[in-house]
Length: 462
Ligand SMILES: Cc1cc2nc3c(=O)[nH]c(=O)nc-3n(C[C@H](O)[C@H](O)[C@H](O)COP(=O)(O)OP(=O)(O)OC[C@H]3O[C@@H](n4cnc5c(N)ncnc54)[C@H](O)[C@@H]3O)c2cc1C
Image (cartoon, rainbow, N blue to C red; front, side, top):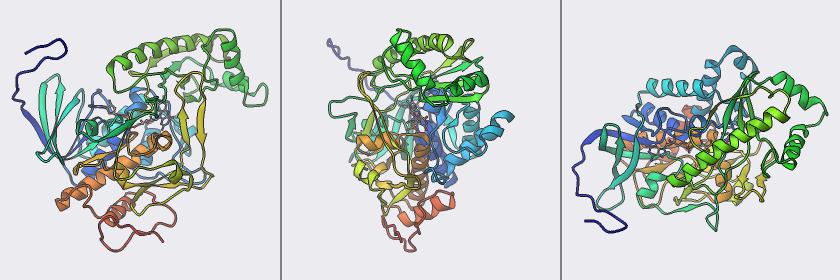
């Protein structure tokens, strides 16, 4: 049957291609950590990823560096995320290792090395990866309170994957949205943080660039050069600071500079426009670098992101919504699964608007409660990563990769616990979750002592 707007497909028999304990959708920082933690907890675990590699924004969008793992005094994100970053450092060239071995904040990403490190880590932990596969629907139980599995599409065809538990690490909350979980997208008027097309420039001369930065003895040299280029029409008006130049070697640098506005990362048409506009922006910036910035005269653009980097889409409604008040008060919660100290970093929605920054003092962090990863109404689904339940300001802080690792690790650990007990996401013992996370080197705060009782959803803080 057909009308002008829709067609009705005949009902289809879809083969069941797999059956697993824990199904992780999305292979970014949150998905990798979730899958490894679930497998290490004893669950048969499958990770489904639409690209041919893991890493999410850190590899597919060439985001050039890991945000801080410290609160400016000590490492506060210490579990799987820190281990994976250390593995990437060890797998890099000797020069890189030498320079960055001790660095914990703004560590440059070598995307090809990182992809291989993630492959190895996933396989070693016993997780089964399934790449080149997109999840486009879910099947709910009759009462609508559990996800029974997902419908995938890939070169092999369409099929159903059955699961006991599922962790949504799509960055966009796709699985939660398909399951009917309420969500918010962007600000009051639907405005979204802009995207950025990140890229890699080879054949650059870092010593020469550094000498140029030192010429005036202050830090404003690059900023002034961008201002000059904008005044002369060599760059469009917009943000003047080049926030990310991440030096992988003296001749190779990752760049995060400028914005593409008005792209909703949950819409293919807008991602298409964003990709084209992003590549045009990168080409224009390349010409700027060559003409204006010493050390970049012979720069060669070797790769841009496979996709425009997306900072913000859906924020799901969870059992708790973490707010800016919680952030500013550095609040702790009985069900904390991690700490966060990254500043509120909101890139505003048009070229005329500015950025919002809000820093906690050095040494101060707030708790990240388990409940922000529990989507309302569904019992066997967790959401980890940049679409967890928070207000918009806190999303501007929680969204970065170190936090995504922490949240993913907690969800994977919780899913393995639920599997062992035959329970669900809300019936697990929070003290036991704490014990398990601590045993995996997760840091839950200087004063944190796990409860010695096994009460459900009760932690204890001294
Ligand atoms: C321009 C830019 C600069 C940034 N700078 C930094 C920085 O310097 N440092 C930092 O730490 N963070 C930075 N961030 C933030 C950070 O990169 C992301 O917020 C973070 O990677 C989110 O992790 P995630 O696991 O939630 O999702 P993602 O990294 O987005 O991963 C989601 C994965 O799920 C897959 N997927 C999505 N939907 C489906 C589906 N339906 N089926 C199958 N697979 C699916 C995607 O292909 C992707 O691999 C930046 C982000 C941007 C955009």
